[in-house]
Length: 239
Image (tube, rainbow, N blue to C red):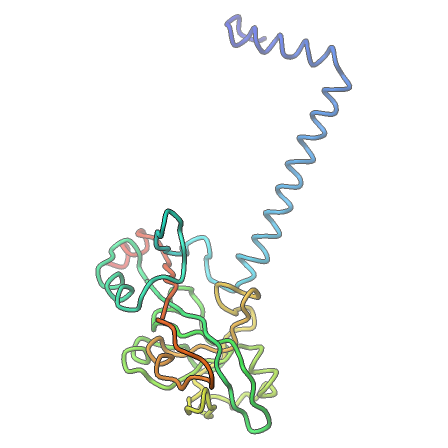
């Protein structure tokens, strides 16, 4: 029995009106059901393709730090010194990482092509919870020392290196500079931007700025997107 309060009277009145217009009621219920079904389906697709499909471990625990600019929130506007300051001073996250996308010339014995790469901080793969399919990932020591090492995407490894299981330790030229291949990323991982960018390889953050420029190109000020992972709870447990 409905309560004899104002709320109860309103509910009874609403039920009577719905009962007086069965066609409208049926249409409204069906519209609501279809709307909920579509919303659930779209979210499932987004979750599978853009979140789970990125190959990031626990993507719901990863956040992107953006910089306010002219009233808007933008990514790609964090300088490397600012990132280092944030990395040192922040206490809310267990890992902080940065990356910058660029295009460089990759020279192989049989072909030379322009490919998309990312320069990443040493904590990048740990922040995203991504390991290596072969070899190892880029580490803080590589970043700090500006090591000329490179990690290949699974796509590039298959397409240009014929899935060679002995590729770790080989050398490849990026913009004319030799880089040692230290690992291959899992097939499920192509960076936080996923298929929108199609990253083919990763090198240490400080290394990209020293690569030779392609003819006719002028260097722009480096910009980095800062990616943060694992909220304060994980950081607190670690301490």
